[in-house]
Amino acid sequence: MKTIIHAGNLWDGLACRPLGYTEIAVVDGKISEIGKRITCENGAKVIDLSTRFVMPGFIDCHVHLTGNSKILANIAECNDTVLTLAAVDACARVLYNGFTTVRDAGDFSIVSWIVPVLKKAVESGEIPGPTIISGGHMLSAVGGHFDFGGVARNGITVDQVSIVEGIDGVRRGVHNEIRHGADWIKYAGSGGFLSPSDGPEDVSYSQEEVNAIVSAARDLHKPVFVHAYDNESIYRASVADVRSVEHGSFASVETLDMLSAKGIFLVPTQYAVVSWARNYNPNDPEYVQEKKRKYADTILSCARNIAESDVIVAFGTDLGTFDYSTNGAVEFSEMLHNGIKPLRALWAATSVAAELLQLNTGSIAVDKCADIIAMPGNPFNDIAVTEKVNFVMKNGIVYRDDCCSYDE
Image 1: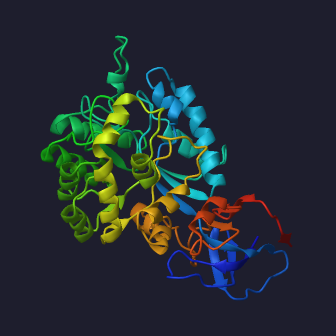
Image 2 (image 1 turned 90 degrees about the horizontal axis):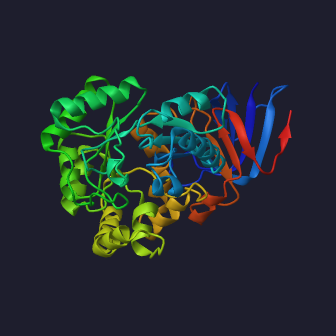
Image 3 (image 1 turned 30 degrees about the vertical axis):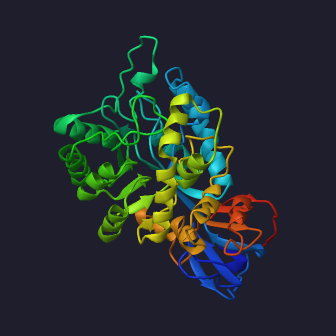
């Protein structure tokens, strides 16, 4: 059955401005026709969004579906059942908020692979959720950012599947993630803020190990993304030609220029990092507060440099390191607060994100997947309206419409 959407004001994910009233035809989950008027054959369903702003579904390039603040605080005690239940809830929430595609940036199970199974459950229709791109586990050095062994202080030995070192070790880690269903390979190039045993300036892997990770993934036709805060780990990743750098909060102007010149994407996760650096949270552990005091000025300075640079920015929230009760669209307002222009922010979550993930979505064009959302206002005038999505279509199926108006 053909579905025709009457869009009061359309932005297609590509143009520099909204395109006004437009009609969109959807057949078999794809966009079949776009125009100012589309002939409505007998039996076609009409969805009236004539009072709403219509655009491509959001793409979040950095989430952790199996995480939340309670899980992170008790990671050594949480089994896979807890993580799976959290992930099912996360899937429904992000889709409801207009995110039709996400890239999972690190499965929090330390002994198995939850996200590839979750992906299949969404694809089969068993649970509602966005299209999921699995980043597997984050490969980490011993004592590195994803080594949760240091969290178990009671003498329990935690044997994790993704703790790898050395050329042979990292290559085996890559192969192991791919054979269990990872679409991308992620590694921890640096330490972090929320991990107790390392810091954001700690560099986890040598240049040779980074080269080996990227080479092994490339041989199996998988792209690589890297958790990297400090400038040296970003530089090593760029030398090895990773596809995207996550966070990048200490990147120098020269390194940002290098990323831009090489066409490497940056996913800055500014609500999780920059907003965090700006605001005091008494619930943060003391070791986290100490890192904030030490690095806040550097983070804020780099955020301004990112806005002024030509680096390709893709949208990512790091949801899962904070709770899914937060609408990930708050990232848009944070990006603007740090100097990124509205159009660049909106591109980052649509056509640019689709380019990064190499997907047939992210724009409203003929033959693209019908991932379409709507909201009650124009985000070019007020970016916060992205937090008020009230219509969600994914692959031609409507999952949310708060103001239903259908004709057949």
